[in-house]
Length: 168
Image 1 (cartoon, one colour):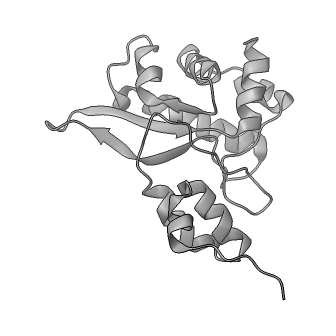
Image 2 (image 1 turned 45 degrees about the vertical axis):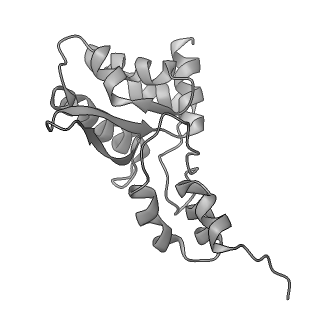
């Protein structure tokens, strides 16, 4: 029997998503998900778990599927997708989407955008379980309880497809 020994300290040094991948490869995928959900937010890019058949991860959209997604979307929702596409990585900051959206002052003003993207993604994929965006960790609030930011992520393929579609 061959194997690989990974110390607890080495395992803990991995990103939350890498930990999830390791646990998933051992058939323990459900155990690691809580660690991903509780992972602290940082400005450093974090690996995004790839969507797999029957696996966890944000849905992967080709350019053709992005065309379907963006067809007949409202200006505010299209603007949010453009801001996400301009991000240097598949991760993006909610504060950037809010700042770049006319009339949006906080995350509550973006609820319709996220709802529209979720409904549309699920419709074009014909799957009521898929998610276009994974929200990493919890929202960040200041000491007074005011919203500061939240980190979101899309799949690398979807990010590249959005960039191609919008010409970035």
